[in-house]
Amino acid sequence: GGEGGGAREMECWTLISTPGFAVKEISQVPMQDPATGAFRPQENSYLNGADGPAPALLNAFSTAIEAIRAPSARGTPLPKVLYIQGQRWGSALPAPVSIGGRDSTGRAETTATVMGVAYEASTPALVYPRPTEGDRADYLADDDQGIYYAGDFTSQRAPGFEAAALSGMDAAEHIRALLLSGKWKHKPQDSPLSVCPQ
Image 1 (spheres, rainbow, N blue to C red):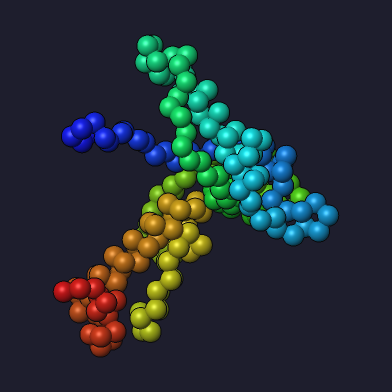
Image 2 (cartoon, helix red, strand yellow; image 1 turned 135 degrees about the vertical axis):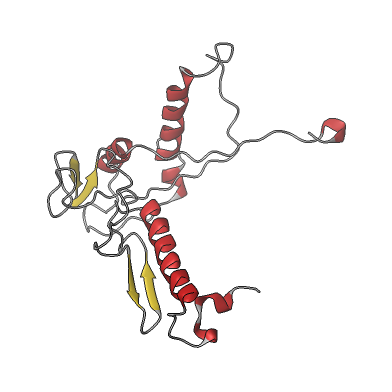
């Protein structure tokens, strides 16, 4: 706190549900309009309303942490929530294909289908080993053109945010190696590093 006792301690939390919690929510309120199949916009009145996913996830979190709270804090309410914002990301953690008993479409016994869309109801492994020598790279590269494309969609790891970041890091390391080895075939102003401050 600051002098005069004016500052208050606050915390900011991001809660991410389990796939099972998400599938249950999507089964109750599908991401598509049942009549037209069109994507439903995520409206705050639904996301953050009394029966929406954000309060439900906060309640589930409160219940889950009750057992691990300090004995003196058990049974006391959590601090007042000043702001809550829900977001449904139906395909944030899609299951990879042909891994862990999944078929060529990524489906397994734990896959739930809601309105023709497959959702993974269990938590798949989020990270698979980096590609080994001789395997396809975790990014697309055309060294002759100096064009590089990275993301979870080019990665051999489980799709999602972690695979996207690791793919980008692998592509950056590839470009760095080209630059350091003198194999970069383009003018200095074409270098990806030319946009970086000196």
